[in-house]
Amino acid sequence: MQTKYLTSLLMFLVQVLINSTVIAQKPEPNQQLYKCNNIGDLKSDALVKARDSAFFYLIRNMGIVDPYNGYAYGNAYGMYSIGLCPPNIKKTSCLECLNGTIPYLKRNCPKQKEGVAWAALSRGSCIVRYADTSISRSLGDWAWMTFSSPPNESFGDAVELRNGVNDLANNLRVRAAGFSEDVKFAFGSVTYKSGSRSLYGSMQCTPGIQRDECMKCLNKATDQIHNCCTKMRKKSGRAMSTNCYFRYSHIDFTLS
Image 1 (cartoon, rainbow, N blue to C red):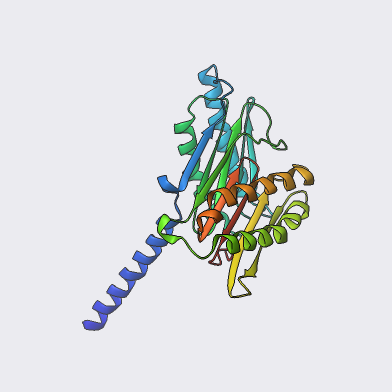
Image 2: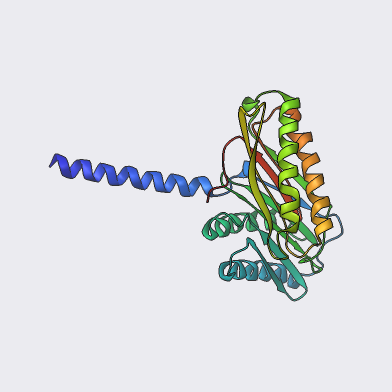
């Protein structure tokens, strides 16, 4: 009898752990940010429905992309959407992130011609963008957003951290921009403070943009990281735009 009780208790605890892991990967309000481009509104309900159809095709295409590169697009009746995830996270995690971010973007940019939303998760992140013009190979520099670790997680010396993040960015930028036409991604680590601390990071650009455009975007992401995070001695930080992102952390998040 006691064995049966212990077995049931163990199964219950395992299920709680699984559910907690799944819930933790869903974007929460404080993990999501958005911007709507101030270029006017969609003039008809038909265009709004077309945008929603573009999101539908985005999710469908992301589900069938093979080999998986963390990028997919959707288009319908003159509306376009793209989604971007780090290619080293599981496809299911990427889809969950996108499915949680698309309604958030639609709710906050209900009729604008262009919008973008970002979600930050423990292992990865996702970017969702839509517009009434083709954006699959275009560089949009009108929107940036940053995430950082909580205020109570300030850490170390600002100058040392800045130098360490610069070394990390220099290690990743060229590799990400030049990896391939379809996958512009790199991750890795460096040590700083005389080798006593490790920094982990990743950089990614949307496929299709030119190498120089990717480099320019990642350079700006590095500047954004310094403004939001290293000067405040944050343990971790992310800078995300419409076309690229840079993330650093003192915890290795790069394993899928």
